[in-house]
Structures are given as C-alpha cells and as structure tokens.
Image (cartoon, rainbow, N blue to C red; front, side, top):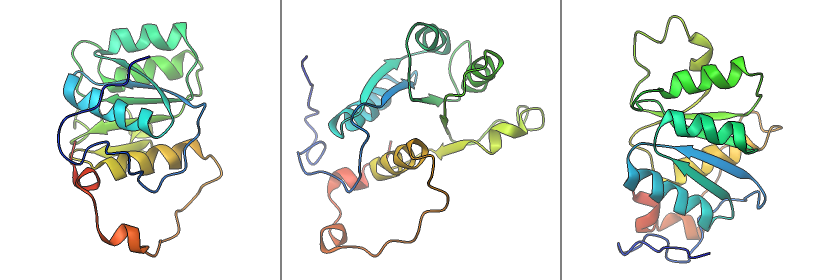
Length: 167
C-alpha cells in the first residue's frame, strides 16, 4: 500500500500530534472536496486509523452498506445525497454508527426537523488538524464525557505548521 505524502512544508512531517489512536478503527470520510477529504484522510491514516474516502453521499451510503466502520465523518454540503440525508438513512437502517458532521453551519431549513442532528458531533469549518484528531478521539472513546482542560506541555507551546493548518 502506497502512502502519499503532501509536499507542503510542515504537513505530515513524521512529528506526531498529541493524540492516542485506535489502531484498528475504520473510518469512512465523505467529502466532495478531493483535496480537503484526502488531506483529512491522510492525517487520520498517519495517526493509525484505517480510512476510506467517498466523494458523494450515494457512494458513502453504498460503502456503509458494504463494509463495517467505527465512525462516519461526513461533509453536510454534498451533491445529491447531503450529509444530513446520509445520516437519516443510516439511522433509519438502525445503524448506531457514531457520526461527525463537517459544516460551516447547519442549513436553517434542516435544523427544525432534524434537531437531533444538532446534538451530533459537529466540526465547524474551517477546522485544524488538531480539531479533527481531537474530535475523532473523543467520539471513538464512548466513556469520554467532558474533556478536562489540559495544561500545554513544552512540545505543545510551539505549534507546528501542521497544527495550524485549517481545512
């Protein structure tokens, strides 16, 4: 299996961000923006997750039916089957898979009818690699309730370019 490295300075440099991973966790990432989706997937792979990507909701739905995943990360604004519609199908099929929804804002027309989605894990764009890894770690750890504030270590005081990258 070939792992592609991005050529931008500071991205995926081999220096790990502070994040415990679940090495066998399988994640489906659905994002129609190929650069953003692949970059997020590469970061997660770099941290030990097995990630499959899909570029639209229909392909994502087919993947969910064909394979077993531990987490779905979906952009809301997808062509055809939106992220909200994908999550609705997932829940209607009785799949208890945890979901992270990536969005700039939940569209107003969807909010009243799907208020249950507002309680879901939302990652607001733009987000950093650290935000993505932190949310994935939190969601995959079901016993985590409220994260305790952390005291920065010496390594965390000097943020790398990868930490500051916004997706």
